[in-house]
Amino acid sequence: MKRTLLPALVLASLTWAATGCSSNPDSTTAATATADASGTEHTGGHIYSCPMHPEVTSTKAGDNCPKCGMKLEHTDKPAGDGKTYQMNLTTQPAQLAAGQAATLSFLPQVVGQEQAPVPLAVVHEKKMHLIIVSRDLSEFYHEHPEFTAAGRYDVPFTFKTGGDYVLFQDYTPSGSSHQLGRQEVTVTGARKAPVKFGQDQLQWRQDGYQATLSFDKPVQAGQLLGMRIDVQKDGQPVTDLDNYLGALGHVVVISEDTQNYLHVHPNDQADRGPRIGFNTNFDKPGLYRVFLQFNHGGKIHTGDFTVNVRPAA
Image 1 (cartoon, rainbow, N blue to C red):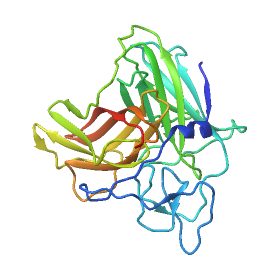
Image 2: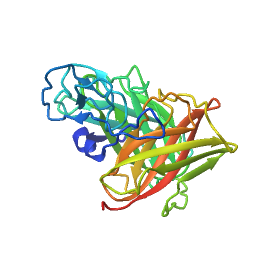
Image 3: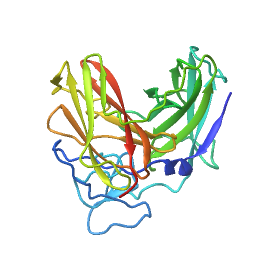
């Protein structure tokens, strides 16, 4: 079987910051929470931290995480546990092939204590979020490996075509901070011509749905951006979106070289669409692919966009 071990502290550097929008979809406000990864002790009140990024803390109730937009929850525990995590990947069969059913198996580990069990916390209704993309970022899949009696997290998956793929795992060990795993795999079989993305693509259409991506200012690196997505069905605004994994929408942003990854969630809002608001921050200029997932009509819909981020002014 093929095994890949990736230290989580190295992988964590792949993530950049984002903020959640205000509950008013027409406005965007920066969160006042701070990413206190140094372990600085807060005094004079309780500590609130992000369920997905426990290193993000605040002493003010009601703040939102400046990385993913989730509402901070009351906790007086310090962030992290001082351990270094890695994700072990095995596949069955060992050599993945296009059109052939396979099992992707993941085992979170503590570096230096690889045999110790690593229980995972439930974040957005799942213990692990697996994102699979083709190397050219034309294919996107969001899966949820399930815990097995063998102590691993398994998911069945069939790759449609041969080629190179990148696997990301969002997970949070219980009592620790959010971790990001990343592996590259090669699938044998017939390959399709790679897709080359260039100009901005800010509209997506499929099955009568249309989603439009927009920002509140020119898209440049190093600044807070208000990002919103408007959803329509057959030309009419969709005002009855259902939750998917606890939120009206999920957005995954991946850089063209697949080295930068971000999973963004909107804040709670009073209405159910048609607009879903986010805040985000691109650390580096370049081309990014933006993948949206939303739930409507009893089905999960996946849209994709292309954004070119200019250098900082």
